[in-house]
Amino acid sequence: MLFETYGMIVPEKGTCPNYELFYMFYSLNIKQNLLANHLFNEVKSQLPVMSLEIKESINHKLQEIDSILPAMGLKREKTEREEYNISILNDDLYLRRKYFDGNYEEFINYITNIQQLITLYSSFENTIKSYLITQGKNADERVFQKKLLDEVCSINHKFISKFNDLYKNFTQNDFTVIWKYFTFIRNLYTHSSGVIDNDFIKEMDKIKNKITDMINRNFEFIERNLFPNNYNILRTDNFIENDLFIITEIELRFFRNFIIYVWEAIYLSHYNLSKKNYVSSHIKFNLEHNQFKFHLIQTHDESEALNRMQTFYTKKMSNFYISTYVCPNCTKEPVVLYKTLYHPNISLMKITQQEEHKDINMERVFTCPHCRSFFISKYKERLSDNNGNNLLNLNDDDYLLILEQFNIEGTPYPPNSEENIESELNLTMQINQLETLLNDLKNNRKKY
Image (cartoon, rainbow, N blue to C red; front, top):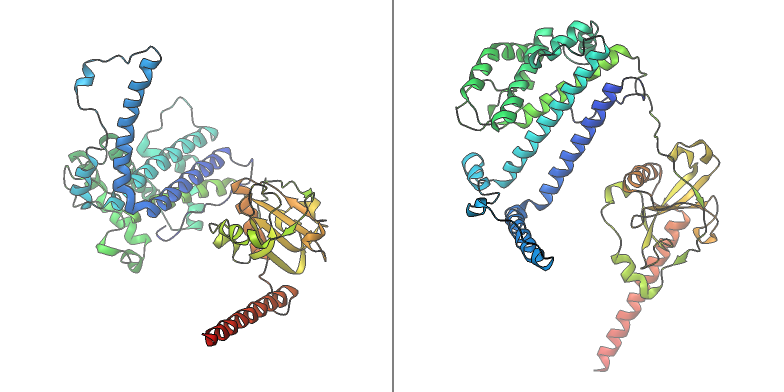
């Protein structure tokens, strides 16, 4: 619960709609937050300037509207509201200075963490309530927020034992107190934007001893002391009224993994899944017989083609290398293809998991990240024989998915292979050409 990452047990389709729904919500939320954090890290040095630009663009938009309307014979109605100062982002500098020492990155992390907590809490609460109704709970009967997991324990008698099989030996009281803890935090963010009030301090004080007991029973001493700044795993005291409650990465990770384990235990208490069960992809790849004619890079196009190579996919293409072919599907400008090999050759079905591809054996596969396409030469044939098969113009998700599979099974050119010998010959030729050029320069210098 303290060290896990983000994954959930994958549901088998049609077994438990509420679990499947939470799995979908959870996955989208996590991907969105990871993407946001990645983007923020890429541009964090520019964030202050970007914030000012956003503010200016909003003001510019209003001026633009005011200039366009008269040309349409219209006029924006002005009221007393226009006499007041109207803007956004005036208080974030104050907040950053007061609570984050002006650190923009910590401020952004705080915002994204709040959004993640509130969204995941809502998704979990709603899907659990729907689950309770499917198990016989009266839909008209109110489920009290703080007693949500008490309801689960009372209606599903296998839940606690299944949870303990998966993780820790939690009691029903443990589930209750953990859920209360995060309910208090969620409500604080929802109702007072995270500003600590006296009610929050009192509520935390009531459950302080139970939280401490739960942590001491379920987490080893080493686990409890692995974190910086002597943070408790879950803080319950030393709060200051009117201060800002800033949820820590430890607390957020605890919450995220706790609700995952709860839902997984509920799911597995109803359904027997085979462990490490392969869940086949719903994606069906449309394989087309090749209609292109493949060409090598022309000398005058070489530098331009190489400049268009995309480096974004580097990690997904560790077993690919630059080929000498130009993508025939990118017609406007030359784009060089990447290439990987299969020794021994393998069936395309191993990549796509589609039965109809079992008789297509691959030795060489080429790809173009620019148009997200794959070009597969037939076994013992070259790409320039123009007799292979293609997967063309995939969407980003499908392309990355199958690219990863091609890469896992593929290899860079092996020692003593035709490609390696060819590459070494090219390198030798280049060295000889350079030596000849150098000798010519030396001879010309002697003349002067």
